[in-house]
Image 1: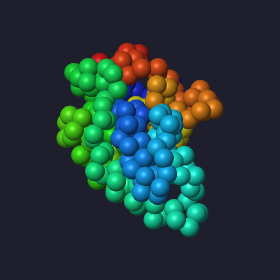
Image 2: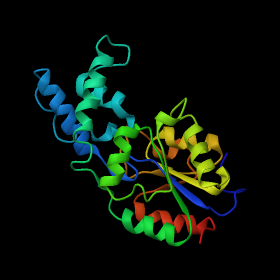
Image 3: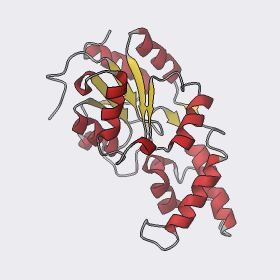
Length: 229
């Protein structure tokens, strides 16, 4: 069921990180290529990992090494991949075009800003600092703070609590089905970021979001249509 018919004007916007707020694909690809080199494997073709970035380490290992979580070496190679990524997580990452202006517009309208990500704190905080977003964001919610990551709604609910805003007065934006599921389960409006890291064959319209945007600069106008300043 859509939340837009009964919710009041938005008071806060919550953003997923990878593929929604920031393009982090190049650094993840570099980390995977370093791991592959350690294993005696050649680099991946450019862009091979990009559509799967929002699936996190699980997606990177599936595409980069053909590993699944139940494979014998999965845990070992996941940990090594993450250690490598920790050294380069802010090397080439950048905000998606238009997001500095979008964040300024949202803040100028009095909306709170939160980040709800499945990226661990040890990566998310330094990355957001390098991008100039954290600690300017009002809250950062990572899986370290939760019993369950997205698609469980815990992260969205905790962000709402920290912002002092009811879930139905929040908008959650993400580029993965799990983001939409988490936001809807929490009672927030949901926005699918179709410009993000959408895997091949995914039908963004089938996720059931309240709205879909094709570029970050569409977000402030959408919030205004829902009654935000």
